[in-house]
Length: 191
Image 1 (cartoon, rainbow, N blue to C red):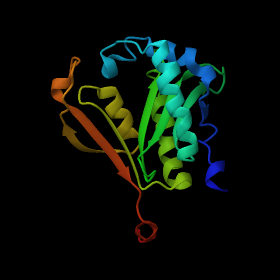
Image 2: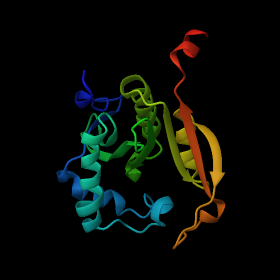
Image 3: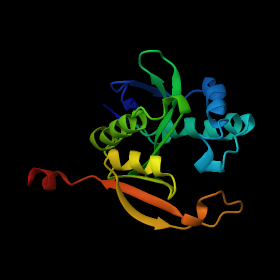
Image 4: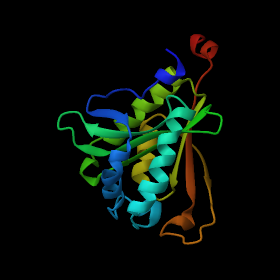
C-alpha cells in the first residue's frame, strides 16, 4: 500500500469514519452552533458558515494530500448513519506526530463514543500510519475530554498557560497536554 492509499479505519463497533467533503459544511456549522459543544473552544460562540466553508474545510481537505493517512474525518453512527461529529489526527509539519482531536454532537455524549473513536485512531496512527507520537490538549477544566484522553491511552505531560486576546471562563487554570509515544519495536519485543 502506498501512502496515497492510506485511509482512516472504516469503522469501529459503533462508528463509521469517512473523509470530509465540501458537502459537510452544513453539518459542521450545525455542530459548531451548539454552545455546549463550543464551551471549551470558544466560550460557546459558534463558528460562522463563512469560516467553515471558506477557511476551515478547504484547509482540512488539503491536508489529505500533504499527509496521507492523517487528517480529520466525519464520524457517523454505524446503525443509523447519523452524522455525530468528527475525529482527527492532525499532522505535525513533518507528519511524524499527530494531534488527536474530536468534536461530537451533544446527543453522542456520555456513550463512550469519543473514547471508542480515539482508541481506534491512536492504534491506526501507530500501526498503519507509523507516527512516533500522538498528543492532545484541552483546557485544564475540561474534565470530560481529559478522561477521554486517558482512556484512549494518552498520559498527562504538562499544564501550561497561553495568552488569549479574549479569554473564556476557565482559561485562568491553563491548558493540559497528554501524549502517547510509540515504543520502538525492539522495546516491545523485550517484554
